[in-house]
Length: 257
Ligand code: PEP
Image (cartoon, rainbow, N blue to C red):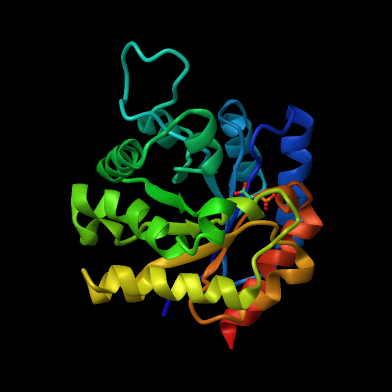
């Protein structure tokens, strides 16, 4: 039985005040909610404050991050290492987000190295995959997703996906308000799971596959009603405690059935 995970990607948003207000508000909204893991990925600079805020509140919210380097220390200006993330309590680390693939030219192979280094450091990779609008229109969605996952499988073997999270995020749906339909998302999730099953059926059965792309309280329940959608990676709606909590609650309700 897969446990749903709803994660908020704050991207380049926040201030000290916002971190405290949002996390305090979210923690209150989630009181008594069980059956879903809720995680947040603030900008790296605010992870320290986020950890202290969550600890003070006795919160079960999982702390994450938006990126990692592939070294733990050394001459790598501007980067953040798994060891540092771990020291500040961040466990769920987003890698391969389409914004990093696009703006920082991160290749499938580089993302796979990040995956490997997170695993080596005992952290949970949240591996983002997904197609562009042009690839979608050309009918290439399944092959693009397979290629992005294969970069990890070729480097580490399918067993390395054990305990990791995959976030299927059609790029054309991120931050656009143009979400995939629940049926289309389910079809792609099923194909991702089937692709992994060709290598290892157990890993495929157990891996959490989140949908991401304009998830809102209004559309969340439809995604979570799908058998292969195990949660969500949420951008815009994660910046509002009530909206993000409503999405998490929808996952808990749907997956309890
Ligand atoms: C994201 O950034 O991963 C994302 C899914 O953003 P949004 O929910 O705003 O589309």
